[in-house]
Length: 420
Length: 119
Image (cartoon, rainbow over the protein chains, first blue to last red):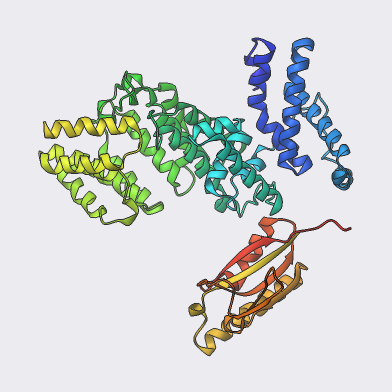
C-alpha cells in the first residue's frame, strides 16, 4: 500500500506523506547500491527537493517511490562524477552490477525492492551504542529529521546531530555491513533490533523526563517500525510478539491520563476508552507469537497484556494466569523488573501481604536501586494493608526517584491520602 | 578491509598450570591454522610480558625520554594481535569471537586499519 493512494490533498502534502512512507525504502535501496549512508541520505533529500519542484507542476507520478528512486540515483551519479575520489568506486559499482546482473536499476515502471531489513540490521548493529541505534533507526527507517529525533529524546539538536554523525562515521570507518544476518546468526541479532524498537516505545509510553507522561508520537513510530519489520519477517515470532505487546499496551493510551494529563493507573482506568481495534489485532498476533516453539519474552509480555486487556476490571482479571505467565517469563528472561511485576500480580492473587514479602526481598537487589516503581509498589501494598506511616515513607522514597511530572503528581496525591 | 584484533587480558588471568598453558597454546595453534587456511591472516604475534615494555617519547625540545614500563597503567594489558583481511566488521567480529584471546577472561578490541590513498 502506498501513501500516495490515501493522500490526495495538495501536492506538497503528498510529497511529504509519500516521502515519509517511502524514505526508508528509498534509503535502503540507495545504501545497497552505493554502500554509503551519507550519500544515500543526501541524494534522497535531493530527490525530494526535485519532487517538491516537479510534482505541483507535472502532477504526482503513478509510482512515486520509483520516481524518487530513479531521481535519487541520477543525482548520486552526478555527485559521484563530480567527485574524483569516487571515480574508482563508480567503476567498481559498475563492475559489480555487470557481474550480478540483478543489481540493475529498476525502471520507473518496476516495483522498488524492499531492502529495509538490511537497513534495520545496520542501524541496530551491536557495534553502535544503543542511543545511536535508536537515533539512526528513527532517522533512517521512521523518516524523522535529526531535530525531530532530538526533540523526541529531549536532547539539544546539536547533541543528536553529533551522535548521528559519530555513528555514521563508525558504520563507514569500521565497515559495518549492510546485510541481513544469516539464518544461524538471526537469533543473536534479532533481539538487538527488537530492543531498539521497544526502547523507542517505552520512552513514548512513560517518558523518563519532562512534563508529559505519554509521548504518543514515539509510541506511534515504534508501532509503525514493528509493523514494517513484521511485514518483512512474518515468520519471526518475537517480531509478532513485540508488535502485539505494543498494540496491547498502547490500546490503553487514552485511558492512562485524565483530563489534566494526570496519571490514571490500570485499576482506575475507564476501560471503555481502550482501543478495541488494537486489542483485537494484538490478541491475534499473540496467538501467532506463542505458537510453534518455546515462547519468547515479548510474546509472554504480550500475553500478560492481553489478559489485562480482556478483563472487565481489575478484580475480575485472571490473576492466577498473570502470575503463571510471569513465572514462565522469569524463567525465559529473568530480571528484577520481571520479579517486581510478578510480586504485584501475586499481591492481587493472594493479597497485599504476600506481595509485600516478595517486594521486600527485592529491595536488596542493586539493580533496582534508583528505580521508583519498587518503593511505589511497596507503598501501594502498605497502604492497602493500612500501614499508613510505612506507606508514607515508601511514597516519599518513590517521589525522590521519579522522573516525569504526572507520575510525581500521582505519588504526591497518594502520599497526601496516607498522611492526611 | 584490514582489521587489527588486539588481545587484552590482565596478568592474573594467565593460565597457572603447565597443562592449562599447553591447552591455550594448542587453541592458539589451531586458530593460527584456521585464519591461515581461510586466507585472511596478514600477520599475528604474541607480545612478551608487560615487564619487558619500555616507553619512548621525544619532547618538543628534542629531548629523548625513555621510561620503564608501558605508557598507560591499566589493569588490562596488550598481549598480542592478529592482523586480518576480511570483507567487513561482521566477518572481523566472527573471527575475533573464535580467537582464544576472546576467552579465558581476556578480550579483543577490533580496530579497522586506516587506509591511505596511494600517492
